[in-house]
Amino acid sequence: MSKNLSESLIRELAHKYHTPLYIFSEKEIREQCQKLKSAISYENKQIRYACKALTLQAILKIVRSEGINIDAVSLNEIKRAQKAGYNTNEILYTGEGASQTVFEELLANNILINCSSIDQIKLIGKIKKGSSCSIRINPGEGHGATNKTNTGGPSSKHGIYHDQVDEVKKVLKMYDLKLVGIHSHIGSESNLNHWLRIKDLTLNIAKKFDDIDFVDLGGGIPVVYKESDKPMPLDEWGNKLTESFNNFSKEYGKNIQLQIEPGRFIVASCGSLISEVQNIKHTPDYHFAIVDTGLNHNPRPAMYGSYHPISFIGAKERKMDGERSYVIGGNLCESGDVFTVEADGTLAPRQFPLLQIGDLMIMGMMGAYTHSMKSEYNSMNLPASVLVDKNGNEKLIERRGTVDDIMRREMEV
Image (cartoon, rainbow, N blue to C red; front, side, top):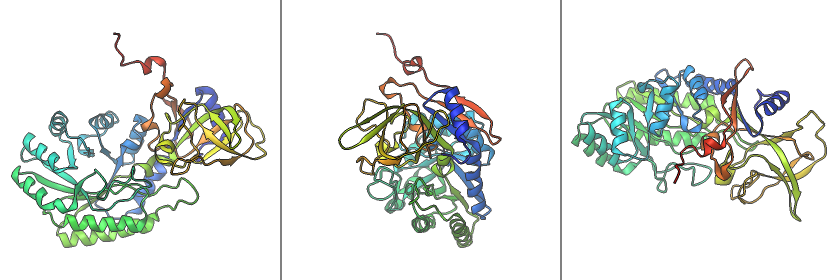
């Protein structure tokens, strides 16, 4: 549960807006932004928000007010950022796809394209010779909780592999393109030593190119979901980056901008998902508590075996006593719709007080890659989203879904 939410406020919001319900804390987002900005003393820096983590307009506006730019992975993410007030020069596009119509629109609107393949560089050149671009390099290793979240190394589809630098140079020259930046990103939940090693690999690759303006080290700053997770030592991390970029700029003969683009770190802790216990049942092996939400509102446990902190309060204030081991399951007609699982998907019951029908589940660390990956599977209505602002006031920022929303794109036959 977010430290900025009280049990009484959760009960009030659940009663007013019904469950399931997303609640986001503005204060939490601003605190995370401030931590990043204060950790790095290197002056020529630009922090970008990897907005795929959470793309709600209200959230983008908060992040923008903190002076943080945008990393976008689709044309629609760019359009959402523009609706939130971002200018085109505040957005970097890094996408795996490369359709000509999308690239034509990006170039026409002066959006900087961070190329993830040599074919993308060629496409820019064919559309508009003499353009500027940056390139995403796969440095040869990566990190992530699973292979599904690892974005570097030989098994990753992301980026241009580091041994293809000479070919990149040939294509840039062929189309008279100006390379302005080098980018790498190795995946989420990387530790300090791994972060710094990838930083060194990326800077060594950057040395092979003349007259770049920035080096972007991506995101992947660790986030604490459970007690055994280790946070990034931000002060040490920031000091190491500052020292490295000061030295690199002197050696390179130019003041190179340091860019980073965290997503999860900025928004993970700001979100909670509130849900009601609707069924309690048991088998010879397990006790189950079924709540009125599911993998359609948080797919991470089903997709990755991810851990989210879970607690319960009474719908009305009551003493939560006793103890029992429960598997927390969702309300979808889907066997994998379970929140308490190990990384390999096996059931992992947790100890909770004795639960009753109507109790409220509070699932924490719900700001990143949950709301943005939600679906209408089983034709379930999407939850409402409420923002608790920095003064503690509530604001509905996304209404609850309806069956008309679910069917909005269907055509009569």
